[in-house]
Length: 502
Image 1: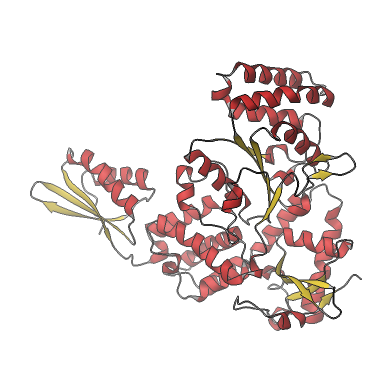
Image 2: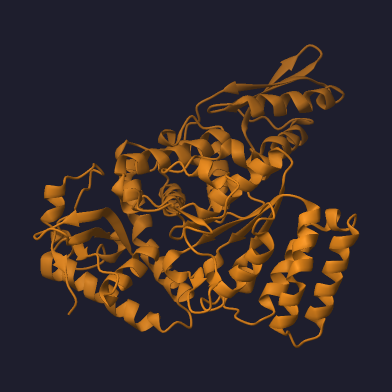
C-alpha cells in the first residue's frame, strides 16, 4: 500500500538514487515516535538492504523511525516497478560501451558460451570475431574492467568515430586518442608530453606524410614504454575502411610489439582484413594475434539457452526480480525466445524487451509466447537496416541482397524448409556470400561440418532467420527444423537440401 504522507516521497527519491529502483511499493506504519517505512520488492538483494540502511540515518531527523526492505510479490508482474526497472536495464544493455554499468560490470557479467574470458585476459594480442550482438564488446569490456580492478592501464577506442576512413591521418588520430586517454599519466611524463606535442604538430600541418609518421614510430614506442604495460582495446574495428585496416594495425603493432602492450580487437570477420600480404602489413593470424570466435551458438543449443537465460537472470536479479521466468507465463517463452533469436544474446534481449512492451500494452500480467512471436516478426526490418549500414558503399551490397533472395526462394518456396546445407568451398562466391549473411544475422550456423556423399566434401548447415519466412504466405507449410533447441544428429542434418551455385 502506497501512502503519500510527510517525508516519504523524498525518502523514496533517495532510495531510487542509491538502488536504481523508482517508485517501489511501500507501506507506512505509524509508530509512537514516528513512522516506519516498509519497502516491498519481489526478490530483494543485499544492495537494496544496503540502500535502505544508507538513507535510514538521514531519515531519522525527519521523524522516520526505520526504513526496511521486505519481500513482496506484485499483483501485476510486468507492470511492477521491478519489471519497469528491468526493462530500462535491458534497454541500456543493448549497446555496450566502455561506460556500461560502471564498476558493477564484472559482477553482473555472464560468461560466454565458449568461456573466452580466460583467453581475453591473457597478455597477448586477440581479435574477437562475432556477429552484431554476439557479445564482442562485452568480452572486451570484461577484460578492461578486470584490469581496472587491479589498477592496470587500459585504453579503449571506439572505432565508430573512424568509420569508413582510409586517409593517412587516421593513424595519427588513433595515437593521439591513446595519449588523450592517458592524459593524467602523460602530464607527469616529459617524454610522453614531447611525443604528443609532435603528433599534434604533424596532425595540424594538414598534409599528412606517412613517412613522417613512420619516422616518429620509435619515439611513440619509447613514450608508451615509459608509461608502462597496458591493453589497447579497438572496439568495432571492422567499421574502418577495409583497405586501411591492415596498414593501421601495422603502424600500431610496430609500437606495441615486444613493448608490454597488447591489442584487443572486436570485429565482424567478413568485414575485416587484418593482414595485407603483398605489402606485408598488419597483424598475421596466428603469429601476431590469436582469434576468439563468439558465435555459432546454435551448434551448442543447450549452452546457448543457458547463456541467454543466465544473462536475463543476472539483469532480473539486479532489478529485484527472482528470475526472468518470474515474468513469463510458461517455460515455453524462453525456449521460443532462444530459438527465434538463434542464440544471439543482444537479439534475445532486444526481443524480450519488445515482448514486455507488447504484453504491457495488452494489459497482460506476464509475457507469453505470442508476445515473443510479435516482437520477433519486427526484428528482420532492423537487420535489413543494419545490412545497409554494414555494407554502405560496398560493391557487395547488390550481390548479398540477391543471394539472400535466392536462399529464401530455395528454402521457403522450393523445399518448404527453414534449414539447408552449403558446401564449404572458400574459393566459391556463393559460400563467401553465405558467410556474409551469417555475419549479418540473416542466416545462422547449426553445424560447422557435415559430410554428405563422397568423403572429403564438407558442408555447412544453416537455418534461416525466423523473420525471413514468418511473413511469407507459404510460411505455415514450412517444415521448422529443431524447434525444441536440442542437439541434432548428423543423420538429421544430412537430410537437409543442398544449396548450389546457379
